[in-house]
Each structure stands twice: as C-alpha cells, then as structure tokens.
Length: 382
Image (cartoon, rainbow, N blue to C red; front, top):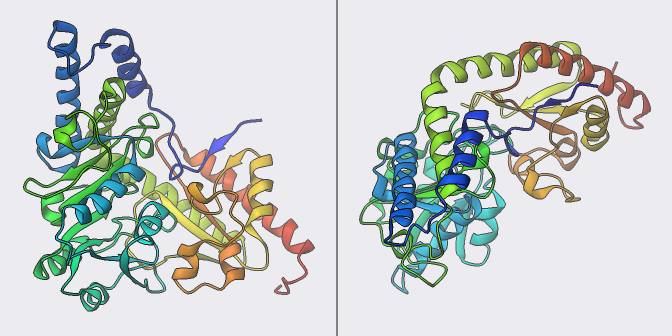
C-alpha cells in the first residue's frame, strides 16, 4: 500500500539536496568552530555561511541570526531573555490565546495578558493595543498559526508595540519557507524559526535578534552565539538549515502557487463530497499549504485512524500536543464548541505532494466520514 504524507506542519521530510549538505558536513567539517586551527576555522567558515543563508531567507543580516536547537528554544529565549534583560518594573507580556505551547506555557509562568482571536483565527491589533500596559516589555504574536494556517497582521501589531515602548517577537515557525519574509518590513525585533518545518533535519533552528535588542541568555557556559547560546555549535545542522533556507527561498514563488492550488483542490473536493463539513479559519489570509476541516457528527480521532490505515498521514491538532485528551485550544479559541473542535482534522501539504495524492485523499476522507457517520449516535443530517 502506498503511503501519502499530509502532515507537513508537524514535520517535513529532509529534502535530498539538504541531506547531501548535511552528510557532507558530518563527514568533512568535523572541527570545533571555536578552535583556531585549520579544521576549526573550516567549521567556523561553514557556520558563518549557514548564518548568511538563513539571514537571506529572513531579510536580515548574518550577525542578527542566533543558531539554536529549534522553535521551542527560540521562543523561550525570545520571551525569557527579553524579560531578564528588562528593568524589574517592566516585566509584562502580551500574547494571544492561539499561540503554540512553546509561547503560551512560557507566558503562563510570567505576568501576561492573553488577547483572544476572532472566529477566523485573526488577532485584532486593537485588542493588542488595549492589552498594553506601562510595564509591558514584550508582545509575542505568532506569524502563522500551526493549526489553521492563518497569517496575523504582524507589521501592524509590531508598530503598536513599539509605540508603547515594547519589543515585538513573532513565532515564525509555520511561516518560514511558506511565505515571503522580511523581518524589517514586519518590524519585529525577534523572530523564531525551526528547520524541520522546511525540509531540514530536526534539532536545528534560529532566532532573529535585531541589532541593538537587549537579550539575556537562558544557559551559561562559553561565549558562543554572541554570548546568547553557549555550547559547541552544531555545524552540520547549521549547514543543513542554511541549505534548506536557500532551497525554500529559491523555489518559494512557484512552490507556493503549486501547493496553494493543491490545498484548494483538497478543500473543494472534500466540501463537494462531504456534507456538513466546513473549513476552520476560512476567510482569513492563510499560508498556502494548510487547511483545517471540521466534520460535524463524528470524532476526529477515529477518522484520523481510518485515514492512517488507508495510507494517509494527517493530524487532529498540533503534533506537540499528541496524546492530549483535551480538544485543541486553538479551535476552542476561535469559538468552536468542544464537540466541533474534536471533529476537526488538519491537512498540511508540502513539496512532495501531488494532485493524484490529493484526489486519493479526497476519496478516502469522503468514504471514511460516511462510514463513521453511519455509526455515530449524534449525526442526524441527511
């Protein structure tokens, strides 16, 4: 049986071009980038090339890129590092109800105000303005939501934050590699990315830190990464992340159009064949690869299992929350009932999906939903 992957927001396969760079760096660039001998300086050169490549994806300069282990570390460093570097009287954070747990759980340990999203999954900049206080040090709003794909008005929110004297952080993990990025146009001071969301290996990410932004480290040791992230650098991981950044930026325009067409084909096909289905987040600007569809009258978990047995990988929520018994906080946050949230599946597409795979997924989903609804004690529609 063929298996088709529709869970790119959880993680992506490593692109062959990126894998080649990664393996070559493992084999050839094994020196410690802090060593002054030839092998160490070769590693340093490879590290700095990767930093330049990552900066190119972000519209930044290389010295503003801090290499980390992924999006979770980047979010934690941005939030906790900002507050640690702020005056004691300025330790308040503003964030949203639909952030990734890497942001929400960090903010739960702090003095934070959480603003709601509307029914489409959008954050109202005026709600952020209303939440600001004299002691607000940071606003942290994600660029693109991991479950809905909804793109937030980051530039407008950043301007509001700066007017109040606060810094602006955005979790860009689900935006990087999917939509054009320019951190200067966005106006952010801090921006998080994670390589395994755009065809690099797991365990490598970065935080953009605008020049002049005060940030304190979370860990202590050597003076690596301008004193912000001690420890011997992961040169092969950085090389792979840089290669993935170049690959995504080079192919972004054409690939975004192709994937958006496949996503729309998937949505239209499912909505045409499955009654009482709806797209969560419809009507809001979204990244091209993501759709979250609600199937009234059934629970998403049996549908997820049925599709998996038929050879399709998709998701009932954020991969970081797999195994959780509670419905998605994102879907509850846009006003869905607990039953509606439990009946929703996320399909996220990527580089290796095809029209034939999409058509097969439409047929499999329609068939599985029909079978499950026949068994459902709550579904009564024709």
